[in-house]
Image (cartoon, rainbow, N blue to C red; front, side):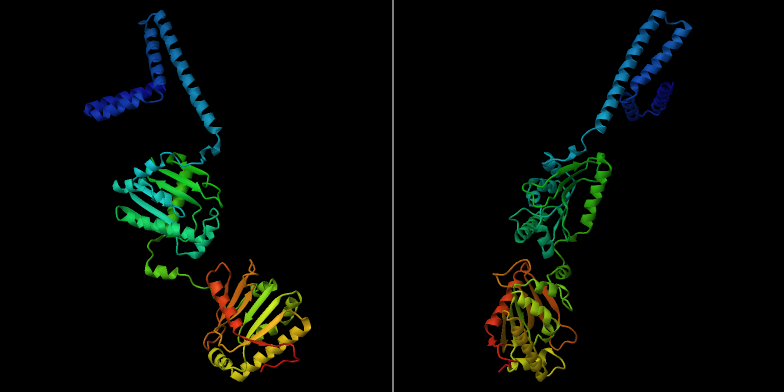
Length: 458
């Protein structure tokens, strides 16, 4: 009866539509009736009702009713078969492999989808192979809009960290060159269409091609970035709006990444904010003593180094007894350099006070030499030092993961502590530059003997 009521409602609607002479609506209604998945049941219900009434009033004979009944049973059996197939399809879908979405290759129609898209959002590290494809040029010629988010090539730390996950042979410099090349190619494309470019100060965790994501036929193709892949990074998977929550999840993720990007080329103020700058400290932390404790050799330069030797005298004894080679370069107390240092660097300290501090350091070093008989060498320089340095395993022969330079800049009569910073071999070329400066100062210094009792400088 429900089916008959549905048919009657459709028929009344047909009559009302015909009364207003709307052919378009009649056509849509007819298509709706024919394509209705319950049409066979409506027909079954209507025919059964009609022939039941006709048989009851005696219009139709028994033989005819029997034939119609058999025909209705056949139609009912066909509907049952179709229903069981629907149930089987649902069961197969529930037991399908959830990992079948993952692929080792990009979809075959990805380029054609990009070429015919009206909007495209690309996110990745360098994406050179995508930008060089013809699909982007075809899309721009047809009036599409492209947004591209890449690594920020001016962020040295980001480039270094990202390069650590790339295949062997792709160094920091090669990664930076790849990103800059892609940005140059995008700048050329921008002249021929609607392209917006941004750079990220974070490393994208996957490449994303988001095609017409606001349309019913949208597509998102994602490639997971592996750590040092041997071949192409996998898995690769594609999502459509029919995938529901996960399609929306990755669409929102892509938009958040885009929102956090910075327009390229960088504005002058932004470029200045991102320029490389050293990280200064007021004091060295526990890493100073930890680094020195792992040293096979130490090269220490400074004006007096009195505070260092006094505060770590026992540690210096241990290091010398354990075989550490120590070279110490101090300012010659008999030279004009000590006067320059007192007047330039130390507000309120006289040249005589600075001379005495150097002599006290030399007495302590002489005592260390006698008590340990360690490999301790001292030289004096007449050059007015601009900074003090503690080099831990800095020479090329002893360089390792423990190599480090602790550098202290001598400011002109500045109140408070001098600015300090730390360099490692990865901080090329500055590590090499400052280490070689220390070696040049050592080479130009004058040997000082620690053998005589309570040795005094000339």
